[in-house]
Amino acid sequence: MNARVTNERVEFAKKTMEAAGIVFSRPESTRTAQSYMISDVERVLREQAGYEQALAEAKNLSDATEEFAEVSKLYKDRGLSLDTSLPPDFAIEETLKQMRETGQLARGSIRRIGVIGPGLDFTDKHEGYDFYPVQTVQPFAAADSVMRLGLGKKEELEVDVLDLSPRVLRHARKLAAEAGSGKPYTIQLALDAARNWQPELVEYWRHFGDQVGVPEKPTAVPAALKGITLRAVSVRPQLARRMRAFDVDIVLQRTAVERDAEKFDLLIATNILVYYDTFEQSLALSNIGAILKPGGFLLTNNLLLELPGSNMKSAGHVSVKYSEKTADGDTIVKYRRMQ
Image (tube, rainbow, N blue to C red; front, side, top):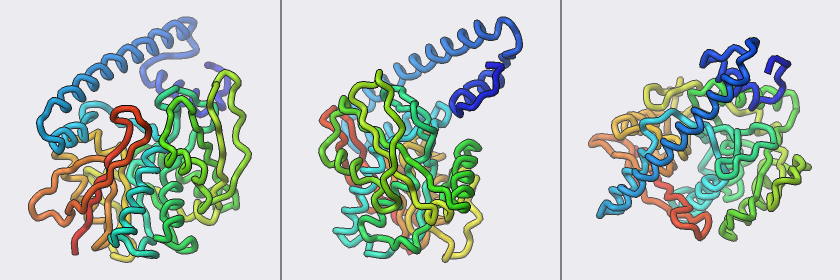
């Protein structure tokens, strides 16, 4: 650990343990680091057991809406997680498709997209593999879907990220700066056969990125990882360089977006508002309404309380299955800013 660290994941782990008081120059540091990690794993297992109990209690509620509301704030007492995965992006595309078909969204109506808490693909949340570089996916997934469905024009579309994590903001700003120099941004997309995804989700994986980039040679999959298929997409610099990263806590702050022309047509917040309680979610919904254009939409997989007098109103929902496993899917709720 005293050698120069070049792996982003190892560097993050090292800084985390140093912040906890571990000094790697000391002889006992290896033993201390091991104890720290074992303690953290035990803590996570205890927390997970608590979440399982909370989910079971939510299922015992007699009303499906009440159950969804409870699950929507499941992680309100834990810290924010930066993990991300591809299935929610598929659910967003399915929702956008339904909105286009029902007339809620017109072709060419989306020019500015904001992704709240886009996350970093630090490690696979199911199997824990981390053999490809840290990446952010959802901003480009959103642009890809909007273009594919004809809801936005390639030459006009802008995608920004809104986050309070220095790591996420640093990553987004770096990729935009590199794109400004002509460097494409590569996204690695893993397909695990053991997940038994629905055919529609597999098809989404196959076509992901065909609107925002071109196929790229993927990172080699380690021999030990049986059943993992990897494909890669090189995102065009023309899109990536237009990305802006706003340092904002959506519960407490609004971005420096004041003119209607700068506000968003679409905001996306998946697996992020679940970390807040009902009061904090209501504050977030109010702040979101302030940065949406009149008639703009928020898409989220959380059920949020609509306060009297709020300009944000529910406009329906879409439920999407990822596999045949129980509860493996998402319900995307549509909130619209009224005039």
